[in-house]
Length: 368
Ligand code: PMP
Image 1 (cartoon, protein in one colour):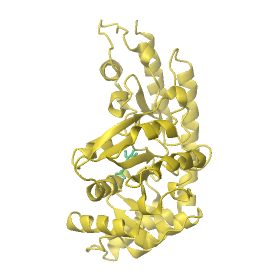
Image 2 (cartoon, rainbow, N blue to C red; image 1 turned 90 degrees about the vertical axis):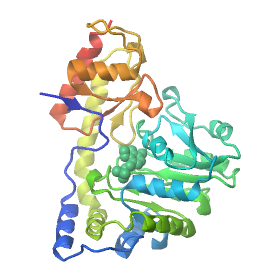
Image 3 (tube, helix red, strand yellow; image 1 turned 30 degrees about the vertical axis):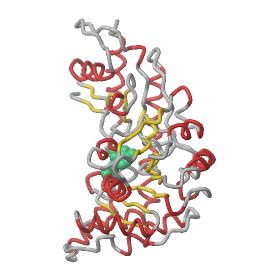
Image 4 (cartoon, rainbow, N blue to C red; image 1 turned 120 degrees about the vertical axis):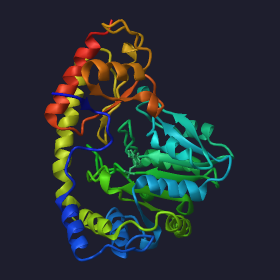
């Protein structure tokens, strides 16, 4: 077997047939023209209906369909952030937030969470990080790269602190929400303390439905600000292609067929990776409740020397060693604000996963 990567952020599954069939049908019926900037009424209604099923009231006017969740985030950063504003990001975090902030007016502030504490964000730590410049708190639930799912009671406790800061907006990135291995994710919208005028959800189809290349996402929040995001999107990208939105609609409607087989495989792969990691000495990790990554702490291997005589000083060195000597790619923790760690996806084919873990085991064993 050749080069293997566990570093990608998308799964190996095929996109649901429902999506492909609907997109083809839409193209064949000529849905190839501009659509509404905010998204089709049918898809916005389906998104609202999805939340209604979870007991959440949402109107289609509160939903904006975006070309990927990244764009949903960028729309929000553009509309909400003013010069000097701070965006609080519980860390380890997806590097995409900081990448986007480079093109926005605000700057990121890390709120460090720790493996030893199960990546909990405590209300006290949050309160200490917030100040009069804090404009946005980003929650990622389930977390990427940690796989941590925040329960409703934890969210309510954090929202109590949020409510002490009347200018603070909350963006809950719930893009992995259908990928869980225990309790389902409670959307921030299900929380009583979530301030209606200042809370947004960002979501999309890339992760839960293996549709990363389709570029389909959405945001939901207070109608006035959603309208401002729509105006920005209208001026820049305009609406998502209508045939793609038909595909998204079909996917949402038929999710009960698409999701269980994927989750079944992911559950099995998660167990496989867990067992293999347990056989590697001195590697600690959080067993993910959601998403499809482990984010182990390899600190015990940092400072060691490779058979070629090179010192592994950082997780980036470890990444290089694995890539050059074992043709294995993992995502260095430094990119997620957690040096010494690495993100490893288990959303790859089983033989690939098994071989990757064999290589990892052998590579770490050789370090002295
Ligand atoms: N949020 C998080 C937490 C992610 O991990 C990703 C993709 N890596 C995105 C947003 C962006 O997803 P997309 O633009 O494909 O919808």
